[in-house]
Length: 389
Image (cartoon, rainbow, N blue to C red):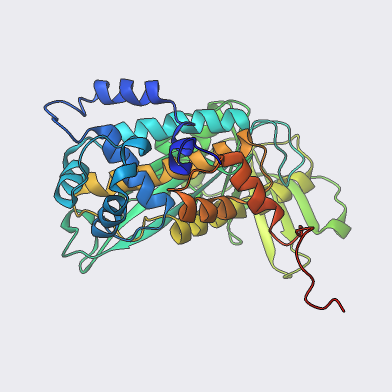
């Protein structure tokens, strides 16, 4: 019989504890704290994320139902709803933002060699924004419209591994293009964006830093064609042109040449226009890169369905940002465990199994590999056959 650590504790062992302690010290998270430390707060909130808890009361009730196991989960302080709520409201959210960023660095290193849907050797990122609706009467600081509240998650996703590299949390009034002012362009990398990021001044700054972009263009965008390249129309590529902008206002913002491609999706019949400053990649690769941008839509859908970022445990801006960043840390942690243990199961399967075995003492690799074998491709050899004669 296995007498080792709890499943939850084994997951937490994959976290760099020295990094967390250094960040807590940097931001003074445990200053004047007597019993319930930032470590206790993080583990309680991570437990809520990993086990689908819907509220502070739900989280505290479940933890106190297993009070004898809290010490083995790394939770040293007494878990009370008021104490956890107070910690979420007062402990600096930047502790958890910086810690999630440290986990992202680890995850990107693990997934650096992964392939994705485009034939590309360098780095490729997808940028997009999702909106989380809030009740304005409970979250007055997050005003969106006159009778509606919201926060926006501006995200840059590494297409290798679907790891969120940059997450910028802002109020609902912010623009999608604001993330282009936050990121530090990586020379040689390709940034894939939807039509909402068609800001020529920001795109020019991106190109001036040595980075490339692929952005969906407008059908009625005024351009002047300079040259055309031969294309293979059987693959859906209609044209591949070198163009310059013709409207004086936009030409001042982007005076350089652009590559303009038109692509017809063979499945939907929809025609898309792409603008890029990369003149070397094949036109088909450019189209494939934009198709891979859909991964960030899947990422947003996944975290909204399987993590607690739609109902919040506190109403202050600090509490909301703390919960979102710990949710991001939980997502990246599952991705790290999946790679380190070489698991074929999906992140959803891993999260489901952890959610119902958090208090069990089962070796983590054995538990998750069992889930992988029982996903419909494995049958137990000693299972009785009810239809034997």
